[in-house]
Image (spheres, rainbow, N blue to C red):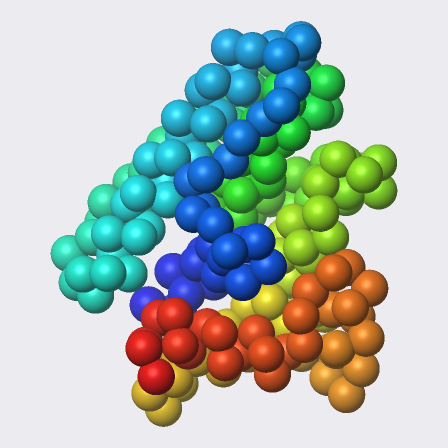
Length: 200
């Protein structure tokens, strides 16, 4: 269960901050260099979110295998895309395509490749093409996979009937770290997660 909890966090942050469907990603750009790649990424993320929301709303573990198979498949697809096109930008795949790519990197099953993608996501964030939450989520996820405390408090585990943050480095200053990348306070975020997933 724990691994899938970590995968759902981006959905919740997006809903909390933007008040919209996780699959409602619209690009205002028509002049991009790789429209076919953009199309593939949007189709991948739509399926990704469809399967995960099905898991959330049904609360049935039978979808575990489906999610794992999809993540494995998407990991291989992203590897091929990166191998062919290297470093993608919004001018290549649009802002929505880049956002879709960022979300998909959170669900990669090859953690070495995921850590490599962190540099790309950071570069696109610093260039103003992605939001701070996109970088923070992947940064924390890489740290957790390496057995280290997270920095922004975006990764949660299920413990004693509710969702609580995984171990956090410098926890007393975590809200300052979160604010720096545009995230709500940890308390606000924790409440939202439990309300959304548990209806509490």
